[in-house]
Length: 259
Image (cartoon, rainbow, N blue to C red; front, side, top):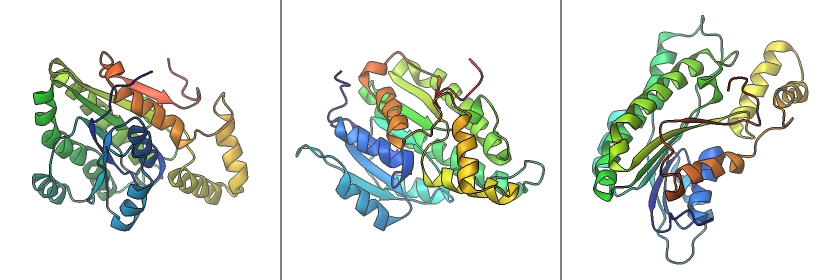
């Protein structure tokens, strides 16, 4: 299938590792010009060298820390904003019960996940409108459909991002712009390793025991590969997904219990 994203310009956030990196690699493999965005410049340079390139693609990177939306906005104002595709992706908040969460934890997560998404959208959508084409894909979590134990702050903020996304989809759909959410389940990333370690420490179980329990929660009986989640991102970013808008797509091996 020709996804028709050759020569499209894509900005991929959190793209130095995990699902973000896999999404950047997938988009580049389909012929898109990919701009990586993350806070660690050395890691950005390393990933930039790995991106597939047919010899005609132009890849690059931007450095930004999502703890500071004002600095992000200023950086964007001094950059080219000719992007057809935006992949919003940010590392999840620290785990823990919601009752013991601090107000600062909620504020920090809201800033990194919603405020910065909003800054990016406000900067990039005007160009998308001129093109009559735009794809905004937000990588969130299955907690949007089914809150996950021990991830109180994350559950709360992910739900807010999903509502923001649906509202945005309703507003920009007439301009040929779609806004969709990918909801990864347990995926083989550093973030998952941290979650498993925390659960192991709290329960007294071994890392492998916790991992096995998590794997068994999905009918597939395994964790996703980052590339498997990225495949859904790439499709939703394509011309072929032009009439898919405002939806949440779980990529979780069937773990989520809701329809």
